[in-house]
Image (cartoon, rainbow, N blue to C red; front, top):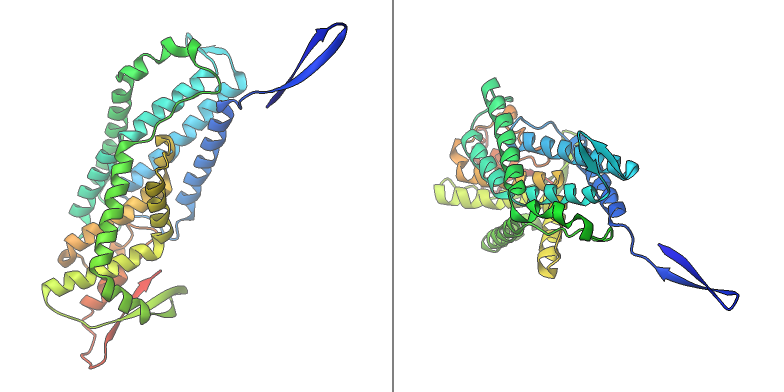
Length: 339
């Protein structure tokens, strides 16, 4: 934004242009608008329905909370200065609400991923398409407890408690928003684990990729890979790891590369932007792959048991190993992995 300043000197006007910083509230509104659009787009654009789980409930709660925050800051932005329920709201509260939400998002990564991991580890072998009513209520209760605990922990923080006293000293062009240390550590751990697993199975993964053939299965493009079956437990888990890697990277490879680039460049992303539905779906696939690998012998091959991940078809990782109709042959068998 540019301002034109004019001074009267000796009967003449001398005008100079001064540059003013863009109001940060404009940027916050635009960022939240884009994030809300991305959240609901991912919720609607998933290729197949998602089985009710803790992560599914939490994804919906994040989208609803983002939408609520967007409506709130838009309302404050439009009316600028008003009183509601005895409280005066100004444009300063746009930054304050965003900061509180950002701090809350930043401390929820560990508890959310831990609860989701425990949920998948205990339910990955169950084949009912929808959990019982008690389990659904438990998911909703767990999501509510996590959000309430997160907000109370944030509001009790000294930095937030002192914010109202700093209202008059904060410039409209400033709104300090920090990243999440929890998200950063999770990203580092995921990139490290994926890199280690890929290096450990590099030879087999390369062989499978070189033998890949593009086919059509159920009106969807799929890749068919060759493999040599082995009935020993150790080889079974290592071969399964290779297929889990191919399934995961076949869907989320751009996300993994972007994550690695962000870590290498040291880019700091605000916590309220980091916690979004696409990121949660990415974490969801990673946790499911870990649960399938840990409990590989308990997984049952039924269609109703593969609805937990709307983006990755994990069943094609197990079909080659558990297909009893496969006849022994000298040539390698084939397994299908959707990409």
